[in-house]
Image (cartoon, rainbow, N blue to C red; front, side, top):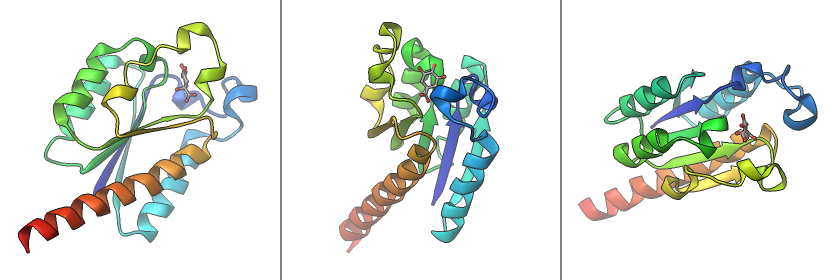
Length: 154
Ligand code: DQA
């Protein structure tokens, strides 16, 4: 079981950027916690962060035939990127979207979300803990898919 974690623009600045909104935790710390959970559950995990839309599209495409699920925080591209939405739809892998902040309580321009409709689920407003919740959810989804496939073969 392999999960790809994809982080969008400015998430490399976690721990520095707007701490009153995103908290003090750095991206490396979040990834370490996800890696620990993955190891405990026998799951392979790969991390990627980019500030560039096209690189995120490329990374999503690379998941096709390689990863079993995607956990993505598209950051600001959530509100603008048809290309990232189309890439997620194209690879057709179970995808969970994470937002550290509760975007519903923020500015008007953040109320538009192009990504959520192509995701299995969204985890919003739990701070960095949302990534852990997404891991639990993804392992559950992948186990259900596996069980359904096994039942079909039996
Ligand atoms: C974010 C919310 C986005 O609106 C913002 O542009 C981000 C981070 C979040 O995790 O809360 O960069 O995706």
